[in-house]
Length: 303
Image (cartoon, rainbow, N blue to C red):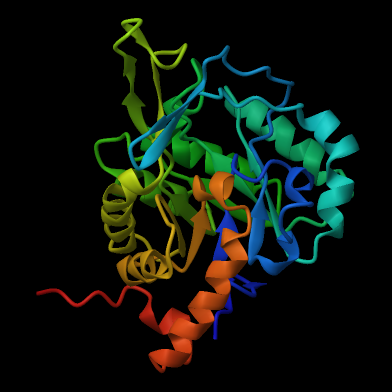
């Protein structure tokens, strides 16, 4: 009823965790059961450790959150030594999110993980982070660079290759097509929208970096529009992200063209939301006589 596939990999549920909202998995093991999810996507891993941006780097907004974490992480070598063992024990699909400042950094990071003893089923390539000073967005806004990066990584692995797209571009369809042409098995959309907040008492920005990434329910309409644009432009599966908090939200994304979805900001508030929504999704299918959720994919009925 809820199962779907990307290439030859089966997902028992269409609900995954968004990168950066579930840590490396073990941080939330006392709060929720990751085995109940369709998949867990790690926070971004880079070639070298990163402290990230200085605080303040997170701020709540109406219907959302601004963040400027700056890809803080332990680096790929420490990740393989300290984090992979726990991830290997999870009884669900694990996807490792990779970020970098140059194509060579992405390549080296993926090579190191490929040579590890990981049971992960694939990689999500972060070409769309809006709150780091170098890299990231340079890849995500230029189709030719996105295609070159994807081709380079495709040569190194037979595992799933998913490219995470930014909404902060002129035509997201062009970046999606470039990912497909480069050999990506799927794209995930969208990453956060560039935003800003100001503290009127201090007259200072709420984030040290001034600008950051807006996530949460506030960006859902933007995410839906981008997913549908991509759906009409590529043949590979889409993983929808952006402000999902209810079963109705999930159905909207699937109708717009997503095959799977990721829960992001809401994980901070309700760590169990992933599998409680899974149960509600099963009930929705029974109530509405939906035998296979994927039958609804792209099924929006225009007025």
